[in-house]
Amino acid sequence: MSIQFFPMPDKTYVIKEVAMVDVVSNMEKMLIAKPPCNISVFSARHRKTLRYVVDKVHGIPWNVGYMDLEDVEEQVRKTVDEADLIYIKGLDRDKSEKMTFHISINDKSSDIVREYPSGIMFETPYMVGLKSFVTYNSIFNVTSKNNRIVFVIPNDDVPNTKDDADHVDVITLDRTLVKESKHLENESKEFTYDFHTGEEEEEEEENIDTKRKNNNNNNIRVTHILDEGIYEVEDILQKIRAKVPKNRLFKIILDTEKQCVKFEGGIGIDFRSSKSIGPLLGFERQMYRADKLHESTLRVDIFPINMIRIRCNLVKSNISDYKFHDDTIHEFPLDSEPGEKIIERPVFPSFYRINTDTLHLLHLKIVDQDNRIVDFRGERVNILLEFRPDK
Image 1 (tube, rainbow, N blue to C red):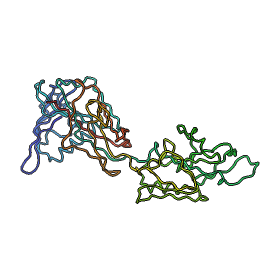
Image 2 (tube, one colour; image 1 turned 180 degrees about the vertical axis):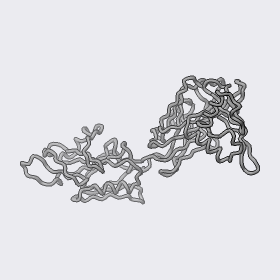
Image 3 (cartoon, rainbow, N blue to C red; image 1 turned 90 degrees about the vertical axis):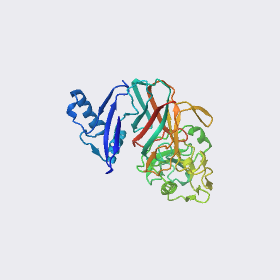
Image 4 (cartoon, rainbow, N blue to C red; image 1 turned 60 degrees about the vertical axis):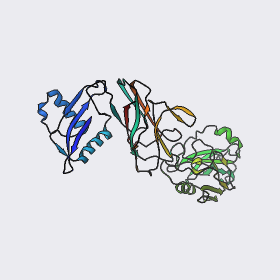
C-alpha cells in the first residue's frame, strides 16, 4: 500500500492517492482510489476490496478528503503494528521497472519465519537492509538458565538426634524442616527448594556427580531457585542473605571500588552448575568452600546483554570476528532501561545483496552479542525491511 498526500496552508494534508498492490501474485495488479470520492462509482467487486482496505489496512474513509498528518501517520503505524503487509514505493505499471519495497514483520518471537508459497521474484539483483526495529525492553537478567545457587552446609550443623532415630531434621534455608534418611555419613545429601514455595524439586545438573567426589562427604547441599526477573546486584545479595540459616555466620557484599562480590562464613557455595547464578556475580564455575574469604575474579555482569543483532537468512556476505559468511544485517547497543521502548531506525541503513532470485522463506533471528536468542517475554517485535535494486 502507498499513500500520497500534499500539505495545505492550514497545516492539514489532502490525501491524493491510495494504492494497494498484490505483490506476491502479480506485480502489475493495482487498485487506486483518490479521496474524496464516491465509493459507489466502483464495481461491486472493487467496492468490496476497497472496504477491506479501509477496514483492515489503513482505515482512511474515502470521503474524508482533508486529514491531519498525525491521523495519517497513526493509520500507517497501526498497519505496521497489526498486520504483515508489503509496502511499495515508486510503483510503475511497467513490469521491467526496478522497484523498492518493504516487508513489515510483526511477531512475539525473536526467531521469526515467514513463508511466501507463491514466491516474490527478483528479476535483477536486490539488496536488503533494516529500516526500523521497535519493541520494549522486557529482557530478564535472571532466568531459568541462571537462577540457581547451591549452599554447601557442613553436616556438623545439623541438629543432633538420637543414634537410633530413623530420620534427621535438616533445616532448609526457607526455615522449613525436611525429613531425610540419616545415612549422612555415606553421601552428601542434596535438596532443591524454590525461593517462594519451598517445594522440593529434582536436581538435574550435568557432570555434577563426577565433581562431587571432591566434596566433604558430610556436607549437605541445598539448592535455591530465584524467581525470574530483573535484578540489581544488591537485590540478589539480599535474597541470598535472607536464606542463610540463623545458626550460621555468613556475610556477602558488593565491593563498589573493585566492582566485585565478596563472601565468607560458615557456608560454602557451589557455582559449578550450568544454571548457576555465579557468573552473573562474577564468580567462576567452581566450588567455594566454607570458612574462607572468597572474591569474584570476573567482572560483575549483572546485565549480560549489551548488543542486539538482527540476522537474516537472505544474506551471507558479512564477517563476524573470524567467522565468514555471517548473516547479520544490523546490530546496535542495547542502551534502553528495562521497561523502556527500544526504537532503532538507522539514519543510513546498510544494504546487503540477497542470495536468491525468488523469496520463498524469510527467517529473522534477534540475538545478543553471543548469538543467543533474545527473549523479550512475549512483547511484540516490529521489524521493517527495505528491499532495493542493486544498482
